[in-house]
Image 1 (cartoon, helix red, strand yellow):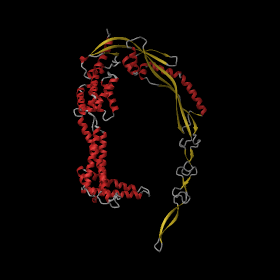
Image 2 (cartoon, helix red, strand yellow; image 1 turned 30 degrees about the vertical axis):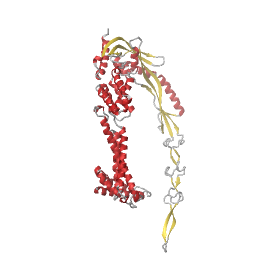
Image 3 (spheres, one colour; image 1 turned 120 degrees about the vertical axis):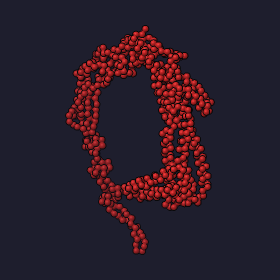
Length: 604
């Protein structure tokens, strides 16, 4: 016969089990929950403070030499005195323990480490070993001389200039003229920029201070520890103590209301406070229809402590049936495999448990297999409230991943390869038919100023043909393959609830389509200017009208002409004398190409 307190414990445990069974729509006639044995006893808790001496050290470059500043010997002696006092600290320990005893429950809940005594900071200084206390070292660039070889004349003191003169007969000849170097005024040596001519630079180790200061502080620390034990034999005592071992002290206080009964010093210099708590432990028998019976153990107001694998009994058969249905034949026959997978999905989605796991698969997005299985397993644990075995939760996660990978995949990989193969062959045939109908004379040899001046007339047709093939491979083949992948994947997801379908247009598809399509437009705009006046340029101009390229490229060209090119012209003034001619030449090609592009696009 259970007491009133034990009946309350059984009711708390029963409500917790029923909450997760009802959450997952488990029929009430498939189980029964009845009270078992119960017992009241005590749990004892030892809350111990251990005292230890610690110190902190901090070394800085330079530092203050005032206050508790000692020599090396005085520093060592003062440190020993502080440690000796910190080991005793009787006055501070008694004051701290008085506060703990008066507020024992609050200190037990906080379970924090306290510093009960701390010395003042004390320090000593020592010279830097790199600079010997000077704060500066010999300059590594000039070796301490303060001068370096002139970079303009190489140390010669003069520069040679070639001057071409024409005599009265009309013949020209070259003379070598020596001019005094303006960088070193003919001396061949310049002031070292690293040390500004002093021959010394600041010591990098001590930052120019020449010494280091080490600060130290000694303190006494009180660190707590908690241990639960039982001085009497009780019902499922080992289960209760094992359950409490991983719980925080505030959890223990909320459910067991401990009372301080004694406190004293121990032999090892520690101080222990002893608490006692009243405990009511009750067995709750859960009988499953057509299965075995489990015992759940509850104590006070915490409810369950064992979490028997109830969900293994109700849902393991679904996974077993699905695994047995995926035979070798069905795995290699797509339509047979998909039909069986759809049947299992529609039957299992009616269960809130499986529906939650399907939703976890969808929320995992385009993560890899390991990540998805982990997310599904975590969802199985939370959906069941822990009433599920670890092996079965792993099997359930793998089964859901396998089922949903067929019924509702986030991508269809074979479509990528099939699309690339078909479109690749189609482009080869398209290019062959197109360029076999165009004569080579249509592509005349570019002028010497053209960027492709090295392409003669006989090769220009092949050259522009390859460029066109490359552009359409980037701009059309990859986006079409992506769109086909999205279409096929969405067809494969037909019939799956929208909450269980992962997003098809994920980040990977968006990046591929956006980047490759942008590259298609950019290369097309570039080749407009390179192929202006050729058959290729006119052909692409008319063909691209249907793709909307002219308007987009025209906007890009206008932006380049009004913003980018003036900015580039301004920046050329900052370039050196060597790179300025090359930059001006490249900028001239860019300006001409932009103007040709704008003119051609307007005509298209």
